[in-house]
Amino acid sequence: MTRPEAPKRAFDIAEIRKDFPILSREVYGKPLVYLDSAASAQKPAQVITAMREVMEETYANVHRGLHYLSNTATQMYEDAREKVRGFINAPSLNEVIFTANATDAINLVANSLGVSHIGEDDEIILSIMEHHSNIVPWHFLRERKGAVLNWIPMTDEGELILEEYEKLFTPKTKLVALTHMSNALGTINPVKEMIRIAHEKGALVLIDGSQSAVHMGVDVQDLDADFFVFTGHKVYGPTGIGVLYAKGEHLKWMPPYRGGGEMISLVETDKITYAESPQKFEAGTPPIIEGIGLGAAIDYIQSFDRADLMAHEEKLLNAATEALGAMNSVRIFGTAPEKGAIVSFELVGTHAHDVSTIIDRSGVAVRAGHHCAQPLMDRLGVTSTARASFGIYNTVEEIETLVSALTHAQELLR
Image (cartoon, rainbow, N blue to C red; front, top):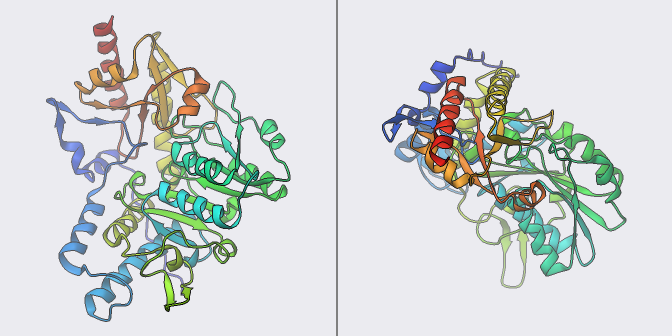
């Protein structure tokens, strides 16, 4: 019997902000304005409580234990896996692998494919807007296996050029690795169409969903992704936990990434038999507390109507784009029509680090730098940008504070 879905919470920003204890603090005597959720989101009390209760009441190592605490912790940990499965609509629990973060998940795929699927002169297609976590592991295969990296170009507005993407495929193309939503520009890429094209050409596709998992509804079956990764700390969960979804048909032939306890069925002096997925790829004591915390974060997100969350973030994006665009001294990077709640910008003639440092004194936290996307910065012709990124708890009033702080910074720097 299907359990009836719990009623959704009304979207009340004042009540939502009460869920996040850190938002009540001050910085330099000013109310905290946290606009750095693309780097790491703040945690609601529901996640903090869930993790504390595990440590205080039910903590033990999971699987194989026969005592009460181990059985309880195991059930809670595997319940979290089921929450992840539902969150991204994976077909099977066996296709949901817990990792340390999205970077670890990508490295798992790269390492495994490098052993069994990608070799000398095989080609990997990447977009120019990828985060380093979806670049460096493929460079490893370039350095160590002789693989070739090919790059999807983009327009000045920050949209990938699909016609050029299709031209990159050759009979040697084995993989496309692509961000769903750019961490630096906010661009939402048409990954479903890009996956379809790649599959027609016989290539596998890995999607980095580190941003899309929190800002959009994700359905891996609808996308038809071979691999999809995201990280816990950007979806209002803890650090130290990430997720790899992989199609079961691939997991059967992929060799494991790490060896040790948990990932084996039988170990003898002269042979080894691996466990079935997901345990096959989860060597060692897993992130038990963090996994349960991720489950609590997913519960929190899904307590709201996804349409309400997306409408709120679109309102913030539009307000920030309009307010910053009205400042003659500000240049915005990334103006694609399909875009999430991220605005990268520069105060013309000023280094982003100086801007970030000055507005920090007004209590405003933004990210400054290359955002782990140096090929993208090279394409834009800059070394760094400032980035305001928004989450469930941000308000239009905070955007007004950002603009006021930037105006003050401009006056100081002038």
